[in-house]
Image 1 (tube, one colour):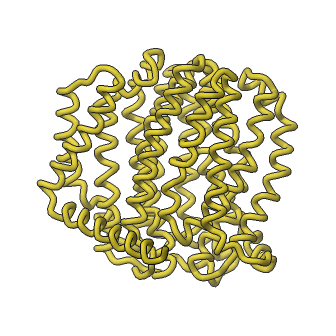
Image 2 (cartoon, one colour):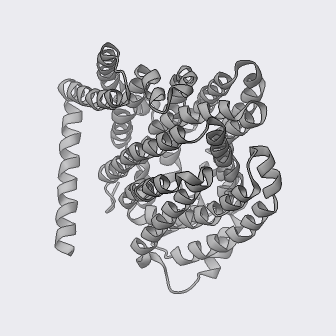
Image 3 (tube, helix red, strand yellow):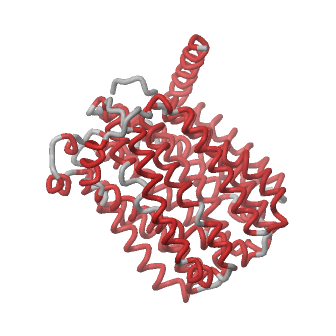
Length: 484
């Protein structure tokens, strides 16, 4: 796979940025969880489950920009302009529904009106993210560092305003990040709107819209069902567990940079794929194991009132681990696919660009049906079971699709080393059994040190991988130094 994008380095930079994001994100969630009433926190999570239904069109054009820009076509300005314009009528619809949405969330209509600002913000961010991801994916590693670096101090100042103060802080943080992306991607914003490409992309926009719809249904529907069938307190507990489990979901950034590189190269060898999945397992496996070992302690950091969520955290940690592996398989399949360069809409329906979306339908349908069937009797445990079951159900057909282009053994590569190292770490964490927030955070850091020390002792390839990544980082620093 040739090209100037360094997959491991970009993945590491994005992942480290996301880890910092995780820490600052957890700080933010701890801040609001300890200062808002559980009902208000539940309303915050409910708003977060409603907004995605208005984001369905945000990747309709950025999806195709993400495939065309790596191939040399400048369509950045076209993508950004379209997304800003399409977000305006969608925001108006959201505002017209403010009274209904406010009654569902049991909050004031003005709070929903304030939430409407998230829509144009997210649409602009989606366009600029696609542009940056196609050319310099490592720059996206600063996303949450910037957002949380702004919103946390602001939230501290605005907490007397309650939920609305929290929302204002988040909106301003995202606006600052959008400004950063705009400045760093200006060389990709062509002078003129490419109307011919836009028309062509709009004809194929159904494909990314399907994908986005599936993704947002999968991400938000279980929380919405909990909000409708249970209480805001139940939703606050579920939301806290999801926030902690999101650390595993951040692992998708580790291998995301392979996509634009595959688009350039058009192929990947089994050895390259083995290295790709192993690189992912090195970080994902200990996250899952450590989260399970310290589940009660991690929940307690947010407040003892959320402790019932500790029983569902292991299930919510396992679900994104399967999901990320599925996503990486899909990234490889679609990255080497060339159907969009030579086929029409009917041809796209038969191509992997569409067929790899089908497991997402299984996930969304399973999540909705199982959650709706179990949540009344099992509470939030039913929703957690639904998440894990949906991940397992959708994982199988993705494996079948992946097996058509590469051996399934490649996705398991590295687990025979990362699992034993994670077990050693987990046993020691259980023996330590930290008490209190600071001791728990210290135990997480100690666990990471134990894991990597064990892994480097038992796995020569991991040591070599670390050296290669460090060397790539040195090269990048030298390039940056020479260019300034």
